[in-house]
Image 1 (cartoon, rainbow, N blue to C red):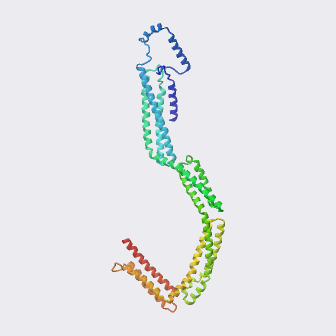
Image 2: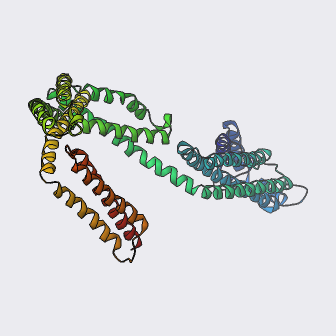
Image 3: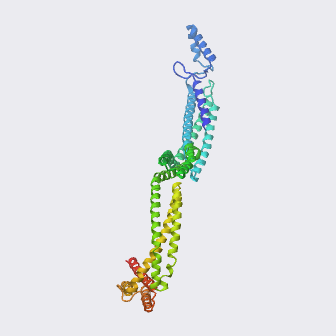
Length: 479
């Protein structure tokens, strides 16, 4: 419709200039705008002024007489012409209002399509296209009606003017009707347009935040490098965001608003991650240095402690049954192997630290710590075993009473508020009592297996503890 509107404007401008005004300010029908016509009109006017007044007086009665002479001003013909011209002006106003509304609505549709690709948005585009076809139809009818009638003709017949008025009035009514449809359609776009405008409002701040995050990450990385740390992995991650920044700078018009918003959020997260890691890098390097020193010291101490396991095993072999120490036979050798492996990993961690391969250094240090923990537990187990076996060999009743107390405590809880215990609680407690009696009986031999006795009493206490936990859980749910 835009081309039609521009054409219509040109025609209306031409038509307006084609109607010159008389000295009284009224439009004189039939007078053209060309220079030659103007000169002829001026000559005729001067000739009339030059005529003798007597001749003018003689001719005046005939000017108002009958005989088929045409009335130039007033009368029904001029009234019909004026009505037709008014209908034309009203139709032109309706045409321009419709054209302006369509242009404004097209901007809204373009806003929606730039942001939203949902079925609802696609339907709005299709509905606007269909409405545009109806607008083209009524616009063509209006232009056809304007072109069909020259209301400025000097010999315009009253019937022709009346017909022109009717056609132009109908064209105006059709334009107004379609304008109403356009207004209602625009109102229905309110939610879609509001959402689209909201996203567009988010676009510029989101892109700016992403740019600022990239700048902050670059600044942090420069500061780290100035301190002597290379941070090559962080530099590579930051460089990978370069193409994303290029796409952000190209704008949503090329890549779409939703995609640009998503890209801005992703760049923001990744750039902030690079910045945070760069700021932590000096502290991370210092922490790795501290761990290297600490784990080296611990490895050296474990090497010394591993040498004490052989005397402990010798005493266990001399004083207790084989079952009490057989599982500890490999502790000295395994401790030395573990310490050697830990020292090799420490060297690898130190090399990774020097090369600023922080992830590798951290991984190697974790391996060293696990090896040393395992070794520490094994070395400590030999000394703890000897201490516990000495205690139970000297006075087994202390272990027995400790276990019986755990069983009785569980039994009292099971009977609390009941005349008879719940079988689910009574059965495992009865089994615990029987198991304790059997373990106690193993101490009566010449070479009792004190380690078996200790493991059995520990298992009995764990069984009683499970019953206590079960009872408390059930009563807690009941409350």
